[in-house]
Amino acid sequence: MSLSHVLEAQERTASGTGAARAIRRADLVPAIIYGGKSEPLRVAVNKKQLDAECSTTGFFSRILNLTINGKNQQVLAKDVQLHPVTDVVLHVDFQRVDKDSRVRVHVPIHFIN
Image (cartoon, rainbow, N blue to C red; front, side, top):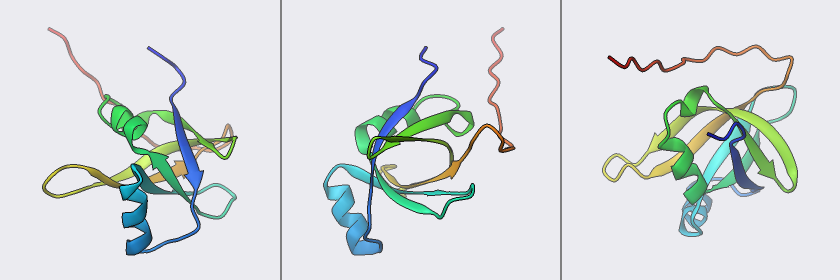
């Protein structure tokens, strides 16, 4: 199992329904990164990589490394919005984390036998 979970992302400037639909047609998922000492940042995440990460156990309790224009940003997934019928990921909210930040997460526990 890999300790580093890296997602490719690119910064986006447009916001709104039309821009989000255009991003989804390009096989990307619109997302936002908030928290920390920086302003919120709108990004578009690679859909294939995000689907693979979302399907694994502990997605909301794992620190992800978002690579945005060559810079790494450590984040936690806070919310994932799904299509009500097809369960396709529509939007993701990420929270910035750093070595000095304090966060609360739910850790999944699986009992065997």
